[in-house]
Structure formats: structure tokens, C-alpha cells
Length: 249
Ligand code: SAH
Image (tube, rainbow, N blue to C red; front, side, top):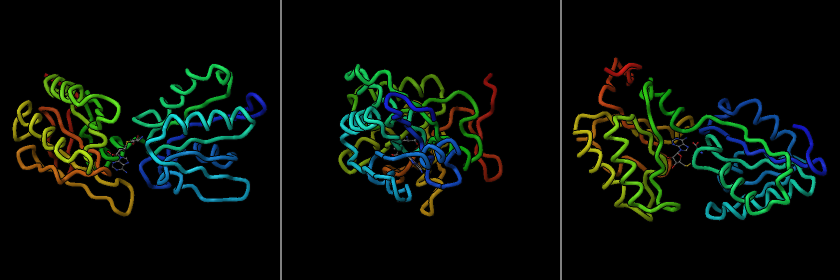
């Protein structure tokens, strides 16, 4: 990566779903050239310590502070990599960096690159077959950054539009009832026979995949390490795989 102001730069990198083989070479070379790595504690824990590299793990709820800190270090001449799991543009740090940049115009000339990664829904879909083979959408079920009403509205409209759907952050201990409500809405809109896939900790040693129907699905099948995929009306099983045909009639 070329140097910006003071030779400093900032890369916002996706580490993929977990397996080191799913980290792109572009991300690996940014990490090899970094002086500082910033991110949520479990993601920074995936970076091997080495001489000349300072790790800055932080709690998840301080995204804007973390983004500002990364911009300040890059402006001071450091080679900074902000790490996210999966892809940094999918419910992760890339947008937080630009939000911080809007508030700090003095940093807008910095050399900032977004390095894509394999997002959870694509890693999960690949394990299952091709459940996202036709039109699909991704919805973050956390109401940390948006009202719950909006989550319900988007869910209902996506189901009515017959998108296959991927749900991130499906469930947490701070909001145990919401995922039950999600399943209820999906059953109303899609009926009990629609396929649903719970993909947990994909590409890690804790990986678990469980496919069933909306009628049989229960809220405890998801946790915060699960991405949930719901098929469209044509999604079906073929052998031990699940796929969605590329055409709609
Ligand atoms: N930027 C990340 C998503 C961050 S939000 C990405 O692109 O994948 C965190 C959510 O991602 C989790 O609650 C879960 O729904 C999903 N997730 C992340 N890694 C996962 C994995 N290895 N397996 C299944 N789901 C995962």
C-alpha cells in the first residue's frame, strides 16, 4: 500500500469467517506491513503478535472511538489495519470509519483502503450448497443501531418479495424474545414448510450446521455466532445439499 500523509495509511480489513485459509492475500499483506492493529477483542486475538506490531483490542460498543483512534494513528504516520470478521463492509467497521471521517475533515486526505473478506452468509451458503442462488437480502437483527419496528418491517417486506434472506446477529442474551418473534413473522409470511438453515461458527472447529423448516425451527437454534439463512419459495433439497434455482417463474 502506498504512503499517504506522513507515509501513514489505514486499511479496513475483513478476516473472513474464521479459517486462516479464507483470509485473502491482500489482507495478509496489509497485516504483514502493519504497525498497529485495531479491532474488537476476539478479532484482534486472531492476529499473531510480532515485533514492531502493536495490538489495540477494544470492546465492541466503542466503534466510533475505535475508528477515530485508527484515523489519528494513520495521520501520525502509522500503518494501521482495522480488523473485522467476515467482510468489513457488512455490519462492521468500514462504515464506522467513514462516519468518523465525516466528523474529522482534517483526515479526509488520508490513504484509506477497504479490503474485502468472505462474509458469514457466503461462507455458510457455500457449506450448504447454493441457498442464495437467486435474489437475496441480508438483515441485521440487532436493534442496537436501529429501532425494532424497522427490523420487523424489513423482514416482512423481504419475505413478501420472496427474497432468500440472511440474518446476522440473530440472537443475544440481552434480547432473548426477539428471535422468537422473527420466526413467528416468517411463519406467517412464508408458511411452515420453508427451509431455514442455522450455520454456527462456520469454518471454525465449533462449526455446526442445522437445516430444518420454519415449522420445526425453535429460537434456541440460533446464538450470536450463528448466521441464519431462509430460502425463497423455490429453495429445495437435492441430496444432502440445499439450493435455490437461478430462475423464477
Ligand atoms: N462483518 C461480519 C459480520 C459481523 S456481525 C461478516 O461479514 O461476516 C456478527 C454476526 O456475523 C454474528 O452474529 C453472526 O450472525 C455472523 N457471523 C460472523 N462470523 C460467523 C461465522 N464464522 N459463522 C456463522 N456466523 C458468523
